[in-house]
Structure formats: structure tokens, C-alpha cells
Amino acid sequence: MKRASENIYTQENDYGCKSHLIKANNYEQMKTKIINIFSLKLVVIASISILFLFNSFTLAQNDDRENKWSRKHGKIEQLEKIKIIELLDLDEQTTLTFFSRRDEHHDQQRSLMDKRDLLYDELYKTFNSKDEVDYHSKISEIFAVETEMLKHRENFFSSLSDILTEKQIAELIVFEVNFRTEMRHQFIKQTEKRKFRN
Image (cartoon, helix red, strand yellow):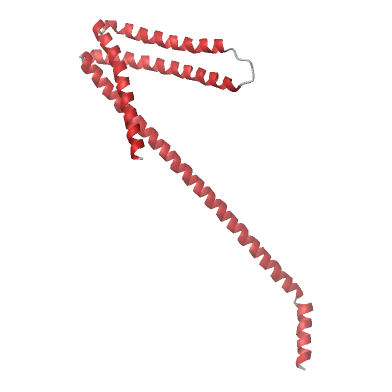
């Protein structure tokens, strides 16, 4: 009797519950797939989040460096202005006129320097080129811009003759060279100190 009931149970399992077993197996497979997909999504999201945080951190560091350089550059410019005013003993009106002309001159020089730097970059790129390059022409272009820079500088100092004496103009020319040389030396010293600390 016991054996008969076992057979019936087996038959019921074989015929009556077969589809349910298949459904259960399919459910388990789907569940595993969903878990795998969910896990993969989590990994992708985590990777993107880490990358985003890293980029944000890098950009923040770059912005911080740029801000520091901008502040430092601004302080150097202020120091230079104060020293020029003291050196040339300028009154208020002469100071305003002088720095207005000087700022305009610096803008022109920066524009020409950008133009020259672009020509240097173009010249550098030709070194790996297989095409024939007219180097004489490219070198002439660079020297033409540098000549223009020198001419603008000369014109700037000439334009100061109505507000400064010849001696003051000479003092200004020497001061600018000495000030830039001193700032360069200070920058090198600071760089060496940072390397020594590291």
C-alpha cells in the first residue's frame, strides 16, 4: 500500500507538476540573470561615479593652481606698479596716464606673443612632416613678428616723452629688466625649495 502511494506521488510529480518544476527553474534562471544585470549596473554606476569624482578632484586641483597663480601674478603686478611709482616719483595724474598707456602696450605685446607662439608651434609640427617645407619663409615670419614687438616697445617708450624725462624713461627700461630677472630668480629658488622638501 505504501509502495503504491509512492508510485502515485511519483506519477503526479512526473505528469502533474512537471510544468511547475520547469517554471521554477525558469524563475531561478531569471532571478540569477536579474541579479547579475543589477550587479553589473552597480559596477558601472560605481565606476562612473569614481571617474566623475576623480575628474572633479583633478579639475578642482587645476582650478586651485590657476587661482593661486592668478593671485600670485596679481601681487607681482601690484608690487611692480608700486616700485615704478616710487622710482619715478609719479604724481596721481601722471600715474593714471602712464599705466593706461602701459596696459595698452602690454595688451599689444601679448597679442603679438600669441601670434609668435602659434608660428613656433606650426614650425615645430613641420619637423615630422614628409612634405617639403619652406623653412626660410617660416623663420622670416617669426622674426617679422619679433621685429614688430620690438617696434611697439620702442613706440611705447617714445610715447612717454610728454609725461617723463629722458632719465626717467632710461630708469624705467633698466628697472623692467632688473625686476623680471629678480622675479625669475625668486621663482627658481622657490621651485628648488619645493623639490628639496619633497
